[in-house]
Amino acid sequence: FTAILIILKPMSVLRQADVACRGNQPIPVQYPKERSGLPDSTGSATTMGPTGCPHVHTYKVDNWKQNLRVIYQCFVWSGSAETRKRKAKSCACHMCGSHLSRLHSCLHCVYFACFSKKHIHDHAKSKRHSLAIDLLYGGIYCFGCQDYIYDKDIEQIAKEEQRKAWKMKAGERFLTWEPNKRELELLRHNPKRRRITSNCTIGLRGLINLGNTCFMNCIVQALTHTPLLRDFFLSDRHKCEMQSNSCLVCEMSQLFQEFYSGHRSPHIPFRLLHLVWTHARHLAGYEQQDAHEFLIAALDVLHKHCKDDNGKKANNPNHCNCIIDQIFTGGLQSDVTCQVCLGVSTTIDPFWDISLDLPGSSTPFWPLSPGGDGSALNGETHTSSSGATTLTDCLRRFTRPEHLGSGAKIKCSGCHSYQESTKQLTMKKLPIVACFHLKRFEHSAKLRRKITTYVSFPLELDMTPFMASSKESRMNGQYQQTTDPFNNDNKYSLFAVVNHQGTLESGHYTTFIRQHKDQWFKCDDAIITKATIKDVLDSEGYLLFYHKQFLEYE
Image (cartoon, rainbow, N blue to C red):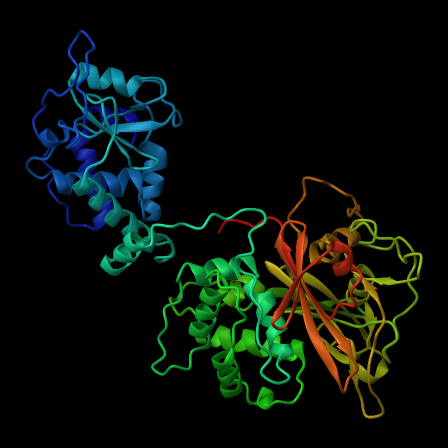
């Protein structure tokens, strides 16, 4: 529909647009007769009184609700792909043809015009039409009051149509919070509001050790300080469908409420421990457990209990839309290359964490050459003055090509026979939170020990050299390792470090967490103390949690 058709036949266009929104059953649209509610020729305007805009009542006649709904459906919220195309094509200023300049539509005759250039004002004055609607935000402007106005009935229609449009686009993902009667009473009786400052300690709370449960406490501290996970639980987004009181997500939601309530006394996580024992039987009992094993078990149970079954395909390798997979799931690409025909077989598997081998283990760590991929990019040299291995070194080893040998031949689809091959792992899709597990505990038939090798890790990490796209660029001769300050797609910031002190048989877990930028705290069960960045970076490191610096809007 062109702008000319809308000028000449606004009624027929609106009816056709309404058919596109509602199906093949047109709803008759009747507009009220033109009424005067504008300033006179001298330019004097009516003042809006305490009861609201006096001009909006002249619009509320005949089928005004139905007409307003059609405008919201076709030209404001536009839920379906067809109405979005129609809006993009037809919504242009009838005077200058611009799509920008805060486009408004007259509510009386569906005339599109610019607000910034006063074209809609000229139309309103010449036609004596008092009301127009903002086509971007849906606000109603009154030319008589010379201001945007609020009307309860119009606001209700706008919200209803907006929710319908959200459902049509991608399911009802974002809901506005409106307090119920009980919440309104609580707000009235608790007028004091807590102000968040840079020195605020809200969210810092110790956890009582219930008997060798430091492995659980350290992971809980890391999870409760994961920004997106915190936002999810504090906004009450979980809708429990479990019949019994055995939902771990509900308990985590309660745990977040306890952490951010402002109470300073240590919390006793007895119910969380009971649910962990119930859903992860291998962790039951008071024996010392592995923090990494608890992290994976906790994520697995949380994933199962908050799995989103709305049918919408998720944009992550696990194809799940639950909050756990949205935050923690990445895609690991495995390329197996035949050494005869050089044919490549590629698979992509989901991962929640990346386990990295360390020097000193029984697995050979191969001699590194200084200045390899990623070292300079992450502000590291190959080795520090003390000869320490870096996190980048571990990642380079993880993503290096590995010869599988004659004992692990694969059947090549190109050669149609078993051939020797090489395997290489790279990152196809990075998660929002990247968790790196440094494999400090070695278990084998001959050996059980802890590897105490110091690994230097940075506050900021760039994962670009370890992406599958970087590997393809290198193969095509196009990859250049640069420190582009504007390319932030794969950059991460450290926000939690889990450490293990002691031996394999007897040890203790603690956590460093970042509360605000450059403000770190050490969580040692019930005791929380302030820490320096040097304390964090000098720690041994067992689990490293990094958060993406920039997030894509989906």
